[in-house]
Image 1 (cartoon, rainbow, N blue to C red):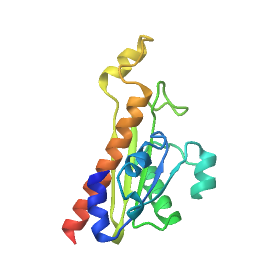
Image 2: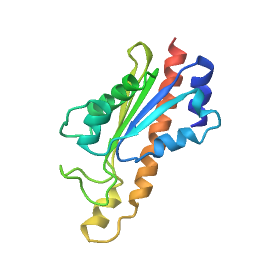
Image 3: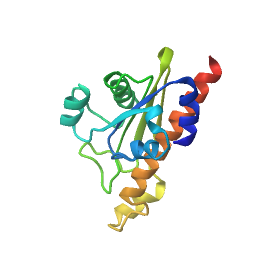
Length: 169
């Protein structure tokens, strides 16, 4: 979060978050930075279709762990909280597949920013997870570890995206 803050604060810019399977860990990463109120507008944990509709005005969509949906979340957070940047995360923390059959460890992260900036990435599960799960053993990566990984990757994408945007302008 500190790297992102160092990029946004001098520009007087802000970011808003919409996260699902990271469960608030993206927001907590940013709030852990001293002076977070200078760049962090707020975050929404919208884990269910009902919360996405009530808090962000988004209609239910299938599938959800996609780059398109991550960008949709990012844009909605940015607009609802009047921020310069929006960061959206949607994935499957596990331990099992989601209701649409998506494997744990799959995550989409989207970033939207000034002047039409958009970037999205997909995270894919470690190959060892499906083998461990197939034998009914505990996954090698816990649900919390996946959530933390999703959150860390999201903050890194935001910093990388802001840096690339500022270098190009």
